[in-house]
Image (cartoon, rainbow, N blue to C red; front, side):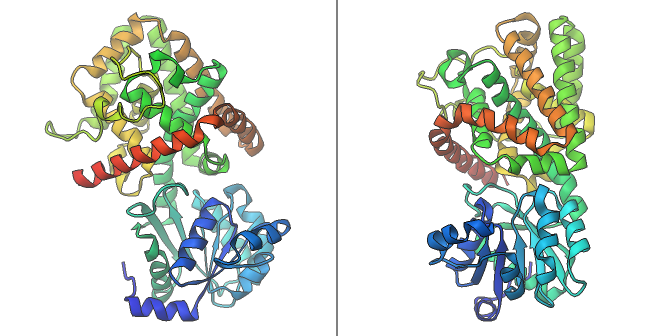
Length: 440
């Protein structure tokens, strides 16, 4: 990383203009943070929203009418738009790009973004794109920030690094192909699992924090992550799932793992189930040393409950959703630890939860016994399998509108709990990030 000295950054701030096209949650985060530390920032959203944004944010940075005005003024332009719209928006504003400028984007899948830049930008434009691997409500400090120098000089890269330094994130340097593969590996199954939980609870007309059977640290983590995902905008997850071919394969495999494991459960094929899950455990966690420090445990996660019930004994549960995650990683040859350097906070929670289930003596064996011999969660497991298959089919259709409808109906069902869930979730994330740092 070649971030300039404070004096060099101040000089750049005097001479360079930073443009943000798209003032959604992440676009606003960037615009506000950059302007706070002294960069000249110009930004725009939809033209019909110009007056609204100018009134709300005009005192923080310069709000422009549309992307043409941003493009012709800016030395570094960041397209902070939905992945499904990147080609259309770059086609609209790309020709107005300032001669010799640098252009990047914030989409979660870089292949269509790079294709749009190649197709619509002038040849004299440099391309250095970025991706902050976290949501807008998470502190940027210490989080992975991917920087992809697709077509840029060393001097231009230094400008981008200097600009991004105010976020205090960890810079990770990848190609766009590496980014998309790693993003799929760390996010596709994570999102599929917790989207499916929320959909299954909605289809069962359940609020899990109101039922005593959903007690215990593992359940707290699952509920908190699911609600956190549904509290965001649908395109954050649709972009990863639909535009990334690697994500398609993983979401399909996750639904397949759910169905096949559930089939072994209801057919009482205990030996085959145990053999399959233990094989997956060996492939995913077999490299860990005996003295490996677990990231999470049930007692710790007990602190982050949305329920009014007092902490009690963990309820017997097959943990089908978590069994299927590790089974799908195993089937796809994914070792999640390989990508921990550029993983999202939600992925780190998921990895901690699955690690705890699979690597705590006796816990996995108890779940496998419950999976076959205890029918208390059988209806819940059935609805979860159906939800996983529903999300898989939605992604395979590549239909953003269908994805949005399915997501927002579930979002509406849970929205009254989002303020409290985000508060609890933020505390849980802070604790886990501290644990990750301590373990490093």
